[in-house]
Length: 149
Image (cartoon, rainbow, N blue to C red):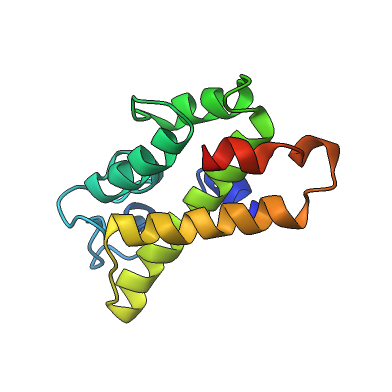
């Protein structure tokens, strides 16, 4: 999962926009919305599908406003507060990006799509599992309570 975040940060994901530069006959439209070009920022942040997923994720961390750009996501991850410590923000961002990318690939390669709220349930379970597996580490103590409230 961390690899996906690293590749995303470097803007090296094989999005349809990048692929269409190598293979011009390939569509560059987003697999999730089919309306705009599939760039990293669109696919993982501003696409209607992704934006709805982020809204569900961020509401769990008491943030009412959605992210508007990749740089805003990176700034949000680095910040910390008692209501959403940096460790929880990192875990949340990594899980969300991983599952958005996985959903994109399911649509592209398997023509299988699930609604945003169903994807959120998968992300929620992933975050709970990550926190549970590391509950004895200092940085993860108390994160489950924060995530569930």
